[in-house]
Length: 215
Image 1 (cartoon, rainbow, N blue to C red):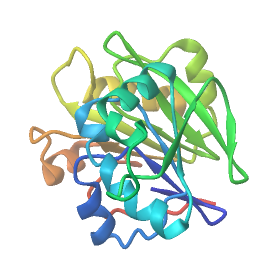
Image 2 (tube, rainbow, N blue to C red):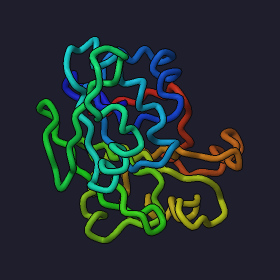
Image 3 (cartoon, one colour):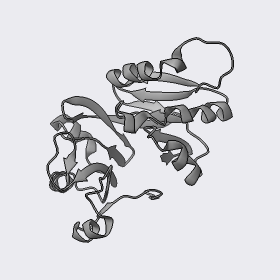
C-alpha cells in the first residue's frame, strides 16, 4: 500500500489481502496497480468489494493488456451482468500504456520481464516497486533513476528462471543507487536474521507490517 497526498494505492490483491488489510487497518483503496495476473498476486481480488461499497463507487484497476484481459477472465463473475444483490466487487479496469495520474498522483509503469512474461513494476515519486522480475530492459532502467526507495522481489540466493536472486538484485542496486532497498516476495530459503547480517548497508529484507516514509 502506497499513500501519497492522501491517496491510497494498493499494488496487487494478494491471496492474504483481507488478513493484511485487517491487521494493518487499511480502510481505503483508491486504486489497484496490478503487476501481473498470477494467483499469488490476484486471489485477494474479491476482498475489494467492501472498499467499493464503503467508498460508494468502483475501485479503478490498472495493468497491462494481458493482465487486464486475464483478470477479467479469471474473475468473470464480476464483469458479467447479473441480478442485483450478491455483493460483487465494484471495479473498473484500465489498460496501462504509459504514465497516468490517479487522483492527482502520477504513476509511472515500469515494463519488466517475469521469465518471458511481460509484466509491470511501478514508480510513484521517488519510490519504485518491482516484483517477480528476472530482467529489466535498458529503457526501463532509465525510469528508475534517482530513487529514495526501491522495493524489489528476490526469492533466494541461487539463480532462478523467473525471479531475481540475491546477487542479481545487489548488482541492480549497485547500478541504480537507491538510498534504501528492501527485498520482498522472499522464500523460506532467506532467513531474515542471517540474510540481513550479510546484506550491505541500506539493503534489508522486508516483512509484513513494515512502514516506511520518504520525503
